Length: 467
Ligand code: 4AD
Ligand code: MG
Image 1 (cartoon, rainbow, N blue to C red):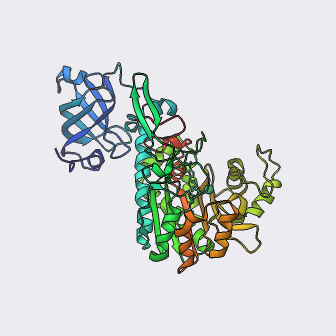
Image 2 (cartoon, rainbow, N blue to C red):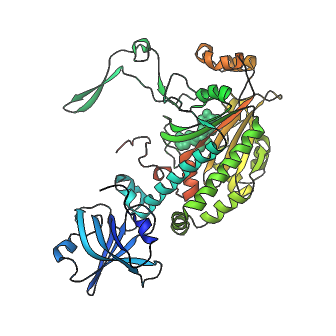
């Protein structure tokens, strides 16, 4: 056996008359007069291969073992299919059964099982239509991300996952420590704190899982010019929403000699190109999402590829929100952060397409953003898209040493901890900008899936780290 084997995707593209071997998992089996029909799928494409088995061809005891979830290989002749929607089908002549799936206990039986239920069997759900399609789209989008940057000469930088600095200054980080020892007891695992002094910990100081690779990747932009990261990030906020994960993947480009305008241009070009690539390569999967999950998906995605993003300042956005006449749950006066409901009203109801909001009040943004001359706002930019809200957060970075230092002090952050970050401003400082795109939010946007838990193989959220 070898991975270089004909997949069901290959088989469906062949002409009738060829003999093939089709490996996969049984989606359904249906028996009618003198003939059985098996829908077989191996995840190589959305469409199943129909296998037709005439009575008497295969031993009855073999055919009985073929049920939903079973893993099998059918060999036989590919013939023209009389059924609508498929050019060919396989006439099953021999069968190899690798693994049965007892119908009495196989959990993935019912069509139309809820997504909530499928999360409980996340180890099996990828065999179904929806999650197979999600994972293929996720894969293609990852490839498109790398392709986009590689074609433009950006270097992929592998920033560390364990870090001693809190990039966003938000204080919602997972500690990484060996001071906490796990002790198995008859009642289950218990934790024991060996020591409380970070100086005695593994790294000799407090360490965390990264919330963003930005500070690290800025160092490489100021040497390699155009760089990006694409990796997992972690946030310990206790936010149980359809848009937040405790572990998610983020893409963070960073560019020297680039201001906020250039940053917005890149964000827009990037999102439009990745969507275009997925539209070009995941047709059958997107057709499924359009039919079953989000009725206007294709229309929206094509519209985004073909039209520019709206741009407005935070101050303009607040004016629009105040004049909206909507009854928002949270206030939206100048100085308060835009909540998800505000973001969605702007992009969905008011503008009707992606919108970039810039120049936020400095109090609601991170310490590293470039201060505008008004002394009130910073060169931040958030990309908001319909159905999702915030897809991207980015900014031009503060590259003036004195301004950055006083901002760190003003916010009560430890100046010493940022010595290397400040060195970038001390030696050969340059205007530079970047942003972070939450990859799962992009996959939600591409598929129309409503819950971020359903676009990652195994989600990590408060109270959930199974599998
Ligand atoms: O806006 P954020 O917090 O920005 C940063 O981390 C910057 N350091 C990025 C940069 O400038 N290099 O996060 C960026 C994006 C958000 O716009 C959102 O799409 C996503 O990351 N995101 C999350 N996605 C899933 N679950 C969460 N808990 C997320 N928090 C942020
Ligand atoms: Mg943000």
